[in-house]
Image 1 (cartoon, rainbow, N blue to C red):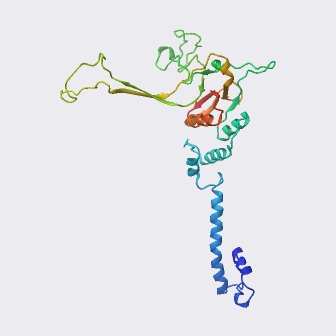
Image 2: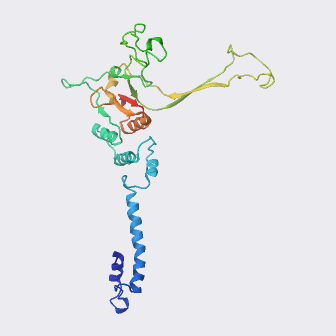
Image 3: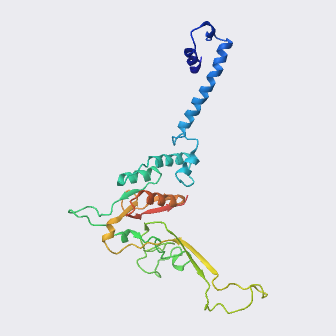
Length: 287
């Protein structure tokens, strides 16, 4: 006899007419049938409760949409781990809290403070971010693929010091870290204008000549889309407002999946205090 059948048994009057626990009786079959409805309701409620648990939810995609978690090529297990980390991000500003949340999201990075170690005396010396970071547009490449100095085995004698031989394609003299402040989208539209030497006055329409006119005054020629660039200040006072993210040992580079770069940067900007400029010491690896 099922649980809910026994519930009915206890609720019914103690009378011979309701003596239904005899095996095979039609009265027992009737109440066993009624017992299926609350059993189904309990199973449904149990499943709904499971949907509130990242490890068991049937609505993983819906929860990711709720928390604005992007598709980054993760396995289902990693997606559930990331959702669990997002659920636990209840707020906090301590370095340990920030580091734990980043690592729970699958980014093996560590936070480093703005001061030099070891601290001698009472007032710590701020790290010079220019030693470890380039401006927000990243380091400038000193040697590009296709240049003669970038050929395999070249000694780099034709390049400017301090490039070390042998020359490697993409080698740079700038720090490989970069500063992350905000991600403000920008666009620059270049339009043809009057007085441009490439244009001549004409009273013809766009299709009157055998070859159509190429452009008109004020017509957009190109649109360049990018982000606002931030330069590292030379004044030491703002250096106290830098927070560095990288490998466990400063200033080593941590490794982050290149497909998750935007997700990684957005999470840093979301969690870290707004007054901090972030020094990103990370190599984005191909998947």
